[in-house]
Image 1 (tube, helix red, strand yellow):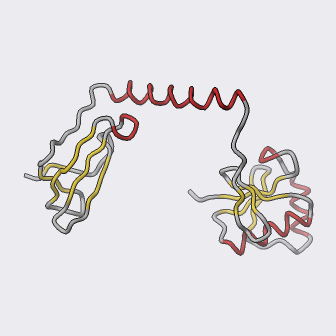
Image 2 (cartoon, one colour):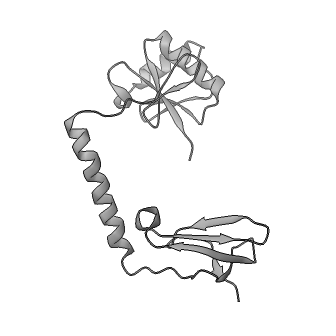
Image 3 (cartoon, one colour):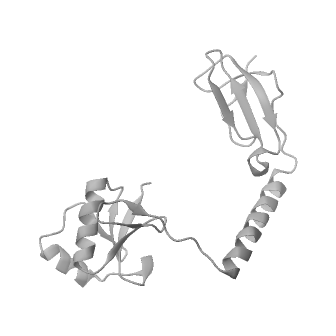
Length: 171
């Protein structure tokens, strides 16, 4: 799964749909590199490097369009991302904390009864390493998903969640 950038029309964001006829006209112009795709009404570049973003922005500007990435950021002529403006206003200020509260509650509910399979001092291993020792266990870390830290003989410290880790007890 890669990161895409898209051509967008002014004031319409990524909801912009291009027609097959527009795509065909762009292709017929001979100015379109082969790394630009037409997919589901979107004109896009998949996992672009900086040079491709610069060229894509040039193409967009020549048609009065802009380039927007998967995270809502736009790009300037140098291919540098310009972050999407943060939402502001009463509704955003109220809904943001509420969404966080509901997300925390949901995680707590889903983690009820989940216990860390290790205690501090337990010898553990991973798929590719042996000789680790649990040095920390925190049930409340990571918004309730828990945290396990393991130190290996070479000094490397690895961590994981209670529910998703690669640690196994070493006998």
